[in-house]
Image (cartoon, rainbow, N blue to C red; front, side, top):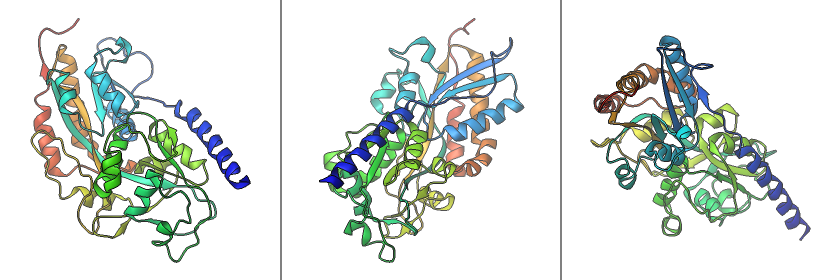
Length: 366
């Protein structure tokens, strides 16, 4: 009883920390202060998964094109879609472009009167980062193990289901503390999509969504940065997070069992392998919940920028086309440096063709 009480107290303190940390989400800006007269200001919001790359892109772009100022708020994919749609959104929160790791649904597109283009601009892995003090080894998690953890069926690190894939290492007798997203998230959409693809119980009980009711007793944190920070400071924890955020905090990452039964670490190469067999449809909306191939990492996702097909201000339409044309071409060179996967040439080609459909409609605003 004393052990259980101690574990409960530990979980409570971790949870309180996660709540505090989740409120600390910062945005990025391509320039300081107010844009000068004659310049163009673009605002965006959404995906935290892509925010590190956006920060690099928008800062670099502003250096080359100082009259274009870009402000981006990493508020999560779900909130990014809401702000982009713009209905019942405060004027200060409305955006020129959104970003999401879950492509908009038909119902969401209908809310914009189908005046929306979804452009895949980058891709990456969703990894399982963990914090196990005193553990020295290469942690391997089978499909049964990591699905069981987030279902609440596997609750201790020395559970036989985990030990079976790690016969040569000593696992600690320590309660598992899952860390999940508090906000509506494309990263959650990618992770739960994989769980639904590999586990019948998850598919029937929870399914795939940007925001879910987690079966396991979990710590909730806001944004990829919040999840990564909570894991870093929480012994016994494990959570799903974009590879780039785990690398930034030097978190340990588990090797996950893929469709071919191989244990694969998230990396540029394994993420690229997971995306290599995809064929992007004409609407540019595709999900890869469980990629094939012996070298493929099992949880990969594209990330989309959301643009209107028409903008009332022709300057805004032109500036957005130029910005994201650069991101799809020159900007891809920065992807690997920050922990993302450069888009395949075939995806870039389709995205550039779609980008040309962004134009001004009606009279320009004064």
